[in-house]
Each structure stands twice: as structure tokens, then as C-alpha cells.
Image 1 (spheres, rainbow, N blue to C red):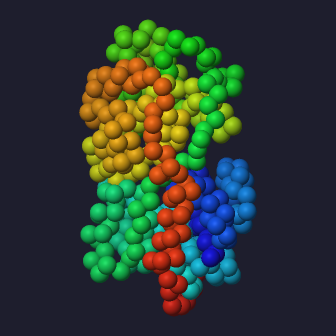
Image 2: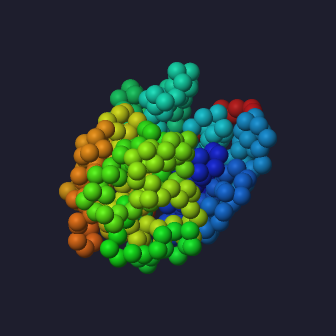
Image 3: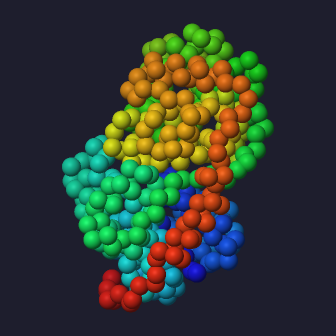
Length: 372
């Protein structure tokens, strides 16, 4: 089988590319061909460089029309068995061309109320179009699956529930290998968050927990990995609360040192809110955290309890005091946490994906040619 991943933008701006990196190596190991079409940037080349055995096609695009034309040409020339559109929209319109099965990673961006009304309406149209134009939808959460099942009124689009996964075991050195990171202090409790720094992702709630946790652990350090528009405001809040010495905003860190940061954390944070946005999304950071077998503090919202089950430390959403309480409880956990990693391994998920392609999706009849 020949599978072509059609991507949009860059890895830092399109988290759906994590599926390519997770699934591709195991699809290739099963004897199938994999091609990746991506925008030609240093970031994308660096990210996909590790995907040995894939055919990588990088496109230099000057406009949306140029990108559509180039992708259409590649899809027509290759005529793969499956085109996996990692993100829907006009830029991935070529996915529907030719005699190929079209699989889409579906989302619910129309429910993101941080977007403008116009953007939400546009996303709603694209979401409904995907139900009618795609042969199959890959859904990262049960909430998404339920919503799209209701939208598929004629039951014509195959659907697969496929959360994000992880490769394991991780290397756990127990200390930072970067000169910019803190040194290893055995008595110190390290609380780590990795992700974008937005209010809607919980960065302010994280900062508000620091005084309460510091009162319980005088030697405590929060490590914040990532960046975003609310970084400066979060740093200002930490200063106003008098806890700047206990929270370090490291920004984005290179992949070659990320493991060292994660390996020496005592507690991981994955804030969630009781919103449609968080119920629908599948935080890829959670399976990444799980491979280090440390306690994870989050909420019983969306996919979090599906991942963690009884092993999670769950706080009440919108309640920094409750989060702080669970952080303190998690920090007292002794020994590794016994997460069920095999179930969320990329090997297992890739097997499910291939079985779905082979058993549920069949190569469609040739579609009417569309000129672009």
C-alpha cells in the first residue's frame, strides 16, 4: 500500500504532523510505502529528517494557489492508495483528486471561541465538507467521534478513533545535559509544564499554584517549556506573587535536550478546562509525559482520564487551589507510575490504523477530474 501524508505549514504551527512522525516508521516496517509532502522550511526538513525510509517532498510555495497546484501535481503523478490530509482546508484540496482514498484528521475548530465569528463559520463549513468529501476520518478523541457520527447523517464516511501515542521507553538520565537548565538537586521538587503559553492552556493557573506549593515544599522549582503570547504576562504574575525564584520560563528547547528536561521532572502538568475545545482535543503531551512514569496532574476532561485512568491526579478545572493540592499530593508519590503504555504505543496505533485502511476503506472509483 502506498500512503501519502499531505501536510500544511510547519511542525510548530501544526501539531497534526506528530501523527506523521508517530505512524510512518511502523507503517514502513509493515512493508508499506510512505511519502510526506510538506512546506520547504528548515524546521520541517529537520523534523522529518529522522523519518528514515520515507519519500520526502518539500514544496517551495509563494501563495495558496501555488501550493495547491504543486500538491495536485504530486498527488496525480504518484496516485497513492491513500492520501492522509493532516489538516483540512483549501491548501489540501488536492487530496480529493484522482483515484485514491482520502483520510482526514478531523478537528472541531468551529467551537474555538477564541477565534473570530468569521473564522468559526469558515471552519464549520470545512468540517461539514470533510464529512461528505473524505472517505475516512481519523478522530483523536471520543468527543470528536461522537460529534462527527451525528454529522454523518447518511453513515457514508468511515471513522477511526485514534488518539496520540508515544514511543517508549524514554531515556531517563535524571539530570539536565544543558548548560541553560537547572542543576540536579536531589531534595528539590520539580514541576514541569510543556506546551504553548496561552491563558486558555492554563499558564496563569499554573503560576497561581506556586505560592501554595512553595508553602508545602520550600525547595520547589517549576520548569515551563514553550512559548506563546501570554509568556510575559505570566512572568509578570509570578513576580507580583513573589515566586519568580521558583518558576523558570525556558522557552522552546531543542529536541536533543528535551528528554533531559522531561526525565528529571517529579510532576508533570496538563491543565484542562471544562470547554468544548478541551473536551474535543487530545493533548499529545500526556502520552509523552507517561513514558517517564511520573505523576501527571490534570482534569477529568476529554482524553485525559482515558489515558491515565486511576493513575491520574485530577483537580477541579478553573481552580488553582485544587491544582496546587493535587501537585502536592503527586509530589509525594514514591516510585514509578504503572501506566499502560503498550495500549498507546505508536506501534499499536499504527497496527489499528493499517487494519482500518485495509478492512474498512476500499479504493474508490475514479473521481471527476478537477482543474486547478
